Image (cartoon, rainbow, N blue to C red; front, side, top):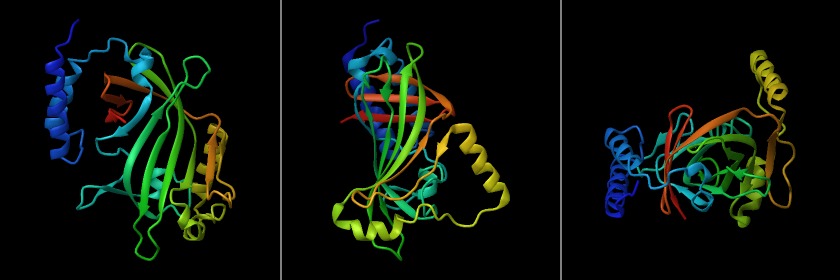
Length: 250
């Protein structure tokens, strides 16, 4: 079915305006209506198999969907480090503001599998510490299982310094990854269960040259991601928990 380019352009403008008016909340009624409209105009019939359109460095333009976030007066969102990283990195209670979220999608060279990393650029906002700029990279892979659906699997994560000039302060805050705070018996049991079920390899020592800390999941759970809209500018997806994300091509 041929799609009118002018209608698509208008629908994208309406969506961008609706997102701007509500801080990127994809549960807002105006945003829901705009997404429903643009979805009906999707020019790509099998987006999960559209290699040329899938591969890009995508920038999130809707609100982040990590749990228990707080929108600040300037419109940005704040989370604890634990909420961004499945409680894998210390200190879990450290408060961060998200500067932007990127998702590079690239063919990995082994069939139809692609990267599905989520890169969160952040700045710490703890008043007792210097402001540090860093990156949380949740590593993942995906591949198509139908014309509109990707299977997604996360494989690990990296906590990394963004500004090399802040290495001393970075090491002072993030170097003690193996010394977790006291936990209850239940928390210890759950941690052991996760390690067994998901092949979880928790963070070890920080790389003293790069400031990086990482963890791995060798048997992570698999999820599904439906592509609602895809063209040369925008990508709109819906996850298993009905979370909708809107990204623009960089």
